[in-house]
Image 1 (cartoon, rainbow, N blue to C red):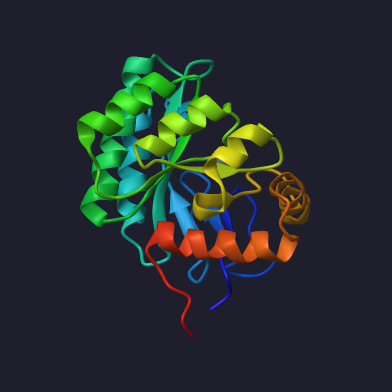
Image 2 (tube, rainbow, N blue to C red; image 1 turned 180 degrees about the vertical axis):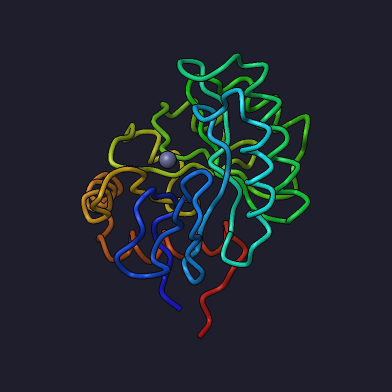
Length: 213
Ligand SMILES: [Zn+2]
């Protein structure tokens, strides 16, 4: 099996299986052999959200879906945080029921997320994707066992706080994983090849899969 290095992208990877592809909401033709995540993003919560969520539930059990998400909380965009929290909690439950980890979108909702993680005490891991917080914020997530993934832009000190042991990397909307890897390699002062190996081993650990042939 291809090493999955990119934990979150909206682009179908050039090499099948090299990334966790976030399915577009309500897509008809779901790729069969491509590892995917599926969720209802806070920006997509509209008057039809219950239908959208039902679609997510109907797809999330598929074998190629390895994670639920992205789901989350956004203080700057989307409906009320109260409704966002309702939809988020429903997806936490879905992930717990299916035993699949959660990809989390977080914009300025650290406190709320940490509280929810404490209260819900999920057995499946969470990753805050596209982490751009500072090292103190990184430490508070790490203390609760919450993973973070790093993309093109990040706080170098936060990356050092997370370190190689729990490093996850992503492209999100950006097309070039190489640029992400090179930035991380420079900050952590480890070769790009090692960043890739570590990130794919950690992705396997996070997703609860292994890459044995
Ligand atoms: Zn995304």
